[in-house]
Length: 268
Image (cartoon, rainbow, N blue to C red; front, side):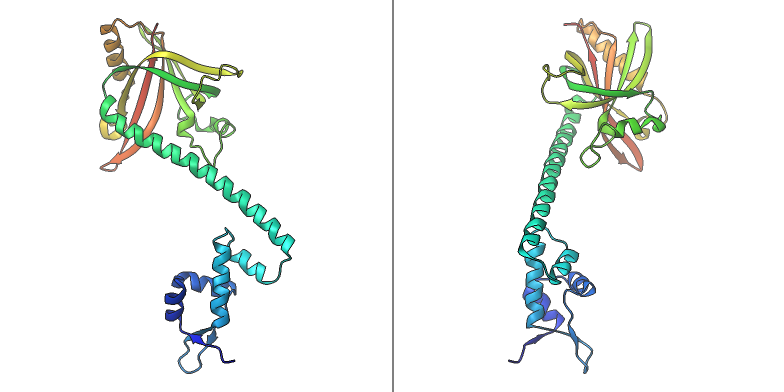
């Protein structure tokens, strides 16, 4: 039986394969088209078309094209079943990671909306529950950062979100500062042991830091003075500690804009 032959353009149209993908399949040896001696065009036959459909079948089941090429060499059914177990586990992990990333996206989008409401404005909020996993001396003490990596899943978490800056102060000014390595929890986790930050009543605000807004100046003193001034007007008594999270970094005119949220616990 004479086999049909197809030019590259026809194959792309019939199967919906991209030109780059087809070239990659050829490099791996998944398909091996003949060369037309008259015009040097590649010619694909019915077997090539069928092979590409099989490759797509396995691609849609999370196999790489290299794995498809290995399958062409021969696999028993039980070997294929084991391979599918591996692929299912990998895909489930990817789904979990993507769900986590989606939640991060939603949280950051919500914070973008909150900037308009809370930037340089003040309100009373509860500090979300944070578990303290460790601490280090300063934001720029990068040689201490391996301690952060020990407490995080690098596939799902980012370093900035694991860091909380804390300040202690009194009526005369700042006393000390340190960096906490934290993990945010949705519940109070009262039944679990560990060190947790729990404050039900805090002065809350968002401030903008970074070179675009402040150049090389440190806004710490100004931001806290204004926040504590508002609290004093409301008759609030601070507990002498403040927590600062970096929630968003962006750029304008090639200059950094950092948006920080500040929680200052006050007496009930």
